[in-house]
Image (cartoon, rainbow, N blue to C red; front, side):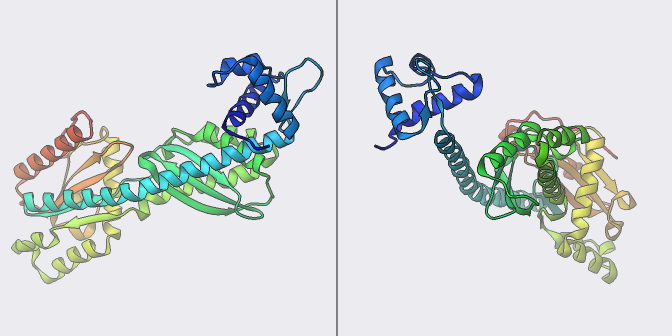
Length: 355
């Protein structure tokens, strides 16, 4: 005898109801809570088969059924498989989405450089601002945990962790539930000591394992600021201006664009400045030494935070000489941000910042 689709639905209904109530489950309850349109007699026959197969047991005469260890095992294995299938599906979608996102960002920065005739940059979305969609844990080997962190925009990070204990699948599933209950919907800035303490306490004797998982999650999100890509275009445009063609100045500027480390620092500091000054899409103007990069003290920088929906947020900017056409650049940036807001369903909220 095999578990066909109907028996699986009945078994899962029994287990779910028993987990919720702690009471044996009868045929009438199954007919009420399952999507099956079957008579109580038919359901009783299926339950008899499930009992004969060892998936459910009858604690005493005239009572309903409760899951056996074999039934629990089937249920847990099904959940783990569904979770793995979901992660695989998201991974496939993300591969496609990453390609499209990278192309979009490169096109945006290219057109911005062409429209302004200056240099332009755009950062890939920051992980630290993205909220956690869900966390998946699995055990690939002894004293190992595979942590899969899925953020808004279906951005996926994963890492294999070394832990100090061997866990069975039920425990891994329970710890996954604990972590998701406490961290789903939170960004890095939302993760407080109180949240961490509550999750760790709920893990009981597995608190050290949960601490390891939480530390890894925080590191993954915090590392996003250092590792996210920066796309640039039009770097040679700013070398058309005589005051920037001095050999030393030109070399410093080109170096900043090529090495990207300085630009990542710029993006990080601009993000902090703009968050403090009122949120996304704020236009900021940094003139000369006001900017965060020493190599660009002879330039001006105009930036804004962009948002593409699904938590995909980053910084876009224009770099030119201090005598840049501010009116044109500010107008171009405003138009671009308004178009992004319109395309991705956000309300325009551009405001000028530093002047």
